[in-house]
Every structure is written in C-alpha cells, then in structure tokens.
Length: 311
Ligand SMILES: NC(=O)c1ccc[n+]([C@@H]2O[C@H](COP(=O)([O-])OP(=O)(O)OC[C@H]3O[C@@H](n4cnc5c(N)ncnc54)[C@H](OP(=O)(O)O)[C@@H]3O)[C@@H](O)[C@H]2O)c1
Image 1 (cartoon, rainbow, N blue to C red):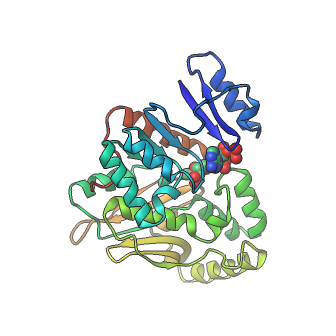
Image 2: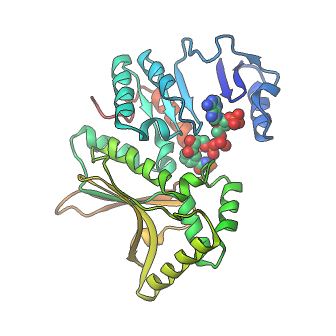
Image 3: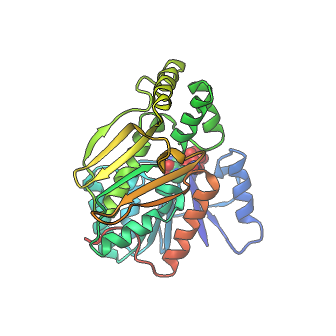
C-alpha cells in the first residue's frame, strides 16, 4: 500500500490493484489534481502512519518537518527535492540528528547530477575521512542548454520557454536563472563530501532576468572566449574555503567545455600527486531523475546507510 500526495490532498493507492497506479499517473500527466482520480483520501491526512519510506518529489520548502519526523521514526527518505538539505545549515543539522535518532537512511542521488555516481563516490570518501581538495562542476542541465542555444544564436527568453516546456528547467525557472539551483546543488555536494558549505560567491546567470538583452550580453562573452580558444561556462567551484558559483572562462579542450545538452561534468581533484577524476553524463531530465529516485528507493530497501554524513 502507498499514499500519493499533491497540492489537492493525500490519497491511498492499493499497489496490488491492477490499474490504480497507472490511473493516478495518467491523471497527473494530464495536469489534473489527484483529487480527480477517484482514489480514496488518506484518512490521517498528512500523517506518515507506519510508512517505511517517504519520497519527496516536490520543489516545496515545506517538507522539512515531515522529513525529520519520518527519519526520527525510522522511515527511510528519498529526495529529488533539493530544498530540505540545501537551505540553512541548522535545518540540515536537524535532518542529520533525526536520521541518527531513528537510525534511518536518507538518499538524494537525484538532487545532484540526476544519479551520476558522483554523490556515492564523495559520500564514501567522506566516510573514510577522504575529502577532495577541489570539485569543479558544470551541473545545471538548464544553464548548459541555454548556453548552447545562445551560441547557436537563439534568444534567451524563447530558449528558456523551450527548456521549461521540455521539463529541463526547474518548475520555477527563475531559480535556475538566479544561479540558486546550482548553488543548492553545490551546497548539497559540499555537505555530503566534507567540504565547506560557506557561500563565497553567487553570480546570477542573468541578473536582470531572462531577457533578450541579458542573452546578448552572454553571447558577447561567448564570442570573446571563443576568439581566445576558451569556452564561457557557468560553473560551481567547491573547496575547503567555500563555494563559488558563476561564469568562468575555461580552455576549450577541458572536460567542462565538452559538456553538451543535459550533461553534467564533475571534476574532482583528490589532492597533490593524484590525477583529477572526471565524472560526466546525463545530469538532468525526467528519465535520468526518475531512475535515480528508483535506484535510491531500492538501495535503501537493501539496507544502505544513505548519503548523510555521520554526526
Ligand atoms: N526535472 C528534472 O530534471 C529534475 C532533476 C533533478 C531534480 N529535480 C527535482 O525534482 C523535483 C520535482 O521536479 P518536477 O519538475 O517534477 O516538478 P513539478 O512538475 O512542479 O512537480 C512537483 C510536484 O510536487 C507537488 N507539490 C508541490 N508542492 C507540494 C506540497 N507542498 N505538498 C504536496 N505536493 C506538492 C506538485 O503538486 P501539484 O501537481 O498539485 O502542483 C507536483 O505534483 C524538484 O524539486 C526538482 O528540483 C528535477
């Protein structure tokens, strides 16, 4: 048995019934609220009951309390929602404390790199007290998509509308454009890999909004970079000092410059004398994200300790 929830309420699904789940999916795909599915309302409203797993697929900033409650009662948590673990450090500590108290796992592969093996690699390193010197990452499928479109001469506002309609951009694309989505991902990576989550710099992708003029300003920077054998990219840099997010010029033959479409690239510099490790692949989009969520569900069911650092 499972419950599903959207803004219209909480509903019970008998997962054994032949078409109950498919019906709920097709109603949501059609854009209607779950209250129109004919599913039974869940009588305890937003109570967890004796659930084994809570999956947060919202982009809501109101799920933190429920996540803490779930973890405290020993319920595993899977997140695609970055907000609960990328906000205020105190809120993150409350989640850690709850997981510790309930001996419960939280996994969040979909929040960064949509399931590329970067999070598991860094968490395992942190558990062994091995922290990289530096991580540089191109981890916004949306911004890479926009930069590519701009290079091809497209207008920023039109191209952003296309990214939203394809499900590449965040539900609220201003979060991408302000650089806040990249900063959230960088904060999660820093917290899980043992690097500092202090924000040293957040440069907006388009400070005055996704206008044609903002796009043209980026196109001018792209042309200047290209004339000098460089690429103009939007990157996150994580070190022991903190996080920097913004535009950078990098060599045109670097790993970051080879990123395309919805790909993400993470370059992890382990330390002196050890060559950097590059992890790249599809880092956004509905299918990779859904796969990452499902893998986390099965991994927790198999007894994995999760992604949170030990308290
Ligand atoms: N799409 C990607 O490539 C990708 C990649 C990595 C991570 N993510 C993350 O995945 C999450 C979902 O993205 P999405 O594109 O699927 O968003 P979406 O299309 O807006 O779907 C969000 C769902 O959450 C529900 N919801 C929102 N607030 C709620 C609340 N307070 N209580 C109950 N339900 C609530 C919405 O219900 P209604 O239908 O009633 O509005 C909707 O069904 C986001 O956090 C995003 O950052 C997405």
